[in-house]
Length: 334
Image (cartoon, rainbow, N blue to C red; front, side):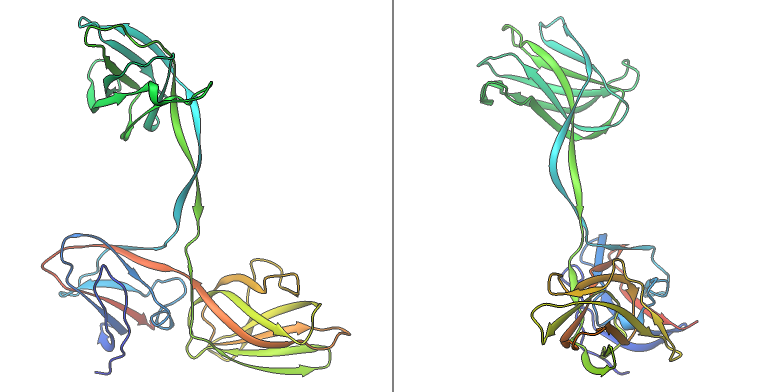
């Protein structure tokens, strides 16, 4: 069995891939046994992608018995909070038998995790609790012993006091403010507060540097970019020398396994200019040999000094249990 020393970050475990015959799969990577049950992410590093199809249909996780484990493929994108939106909710303030203030709030049957209260100026503090209901008959506790401290807010037009609680979905909410025999707060408005977020794309991982060769023929420069293996990539970056100001149109072609070349689909026009980043997103590809055609027209040729292919970070996620050992299998040619 021939082994290659490749490390994959997997919940603090290291995986060493090796060639094997696993029911039609030509390559596998040992994952090992998790220290505790749960969802785990395995980074699909550049060393693995030459053995995986670009639609990831031939990669599997199996246990020691050869049973396939359900999984999903995703990128390491994440949400960044950019602000918040306030939506007024209808409410009624009543007093219960213990002289506590009870806010009966009508929601919109959507998820909520924060309610804001406009409270008239006061230096007092109170504890409160939050409950939810779908029929105003049966109530379920969401959170209790929350301190209301309106005095901590500053400014002529302070923001609503925010009550945070676990994400819930009810048609009605009940906030009970415990006055302990003292005068109540004056609540003037109630809001559902929703966070505004934006998705940040995952980081890109550079593949090993490819070799490049260039041929200038007439008004066209052809740059051959050769990856050491057929790594996945969805971004191409080049560096240019030979001119201070330049602007050229270009096209990128990839060599298929049968030796034919086909144009690589770009996600934006490929313009090589001194004012551009010289970095382009492309549809996911795994061509080992790439041909960059630069159309010089009547201008002197440019010199491409380097090229970099990169892949947006990808992970395979699955629930793994203790008492079992797992491996990735891939490279199914069927």
